[in-house]
Length: 110
Image (tube, one colour):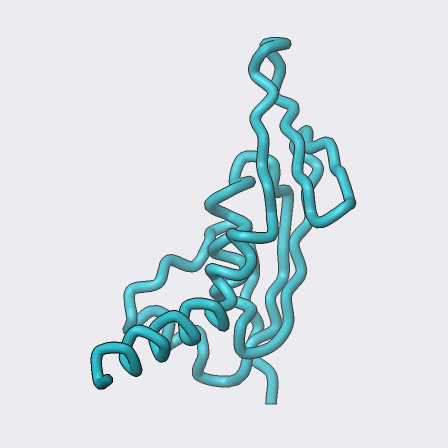
């Protein structure tokens, strides 16, 4: 029973992880057949053509994790981004060795 409870707990934590949620809901396709830098991003029923034209904005406690996920998928297409995070979140991410992206500005708020 303890093993089942731990498995259920871990599954629930993973399902609520903002990094995992973003990675699961963004579908990224490189379009290298045409030998160009374009790519496609699918978010639910929305379809976006990426060609170095992506801006990222995120707000709140989950912003750093969400930005990491977007950056891993779409790095070369991101022009700029901003993430407004709670005070101390940037330092905590650094302590936990979570890579903050270099082209997204993180701003603490009170």
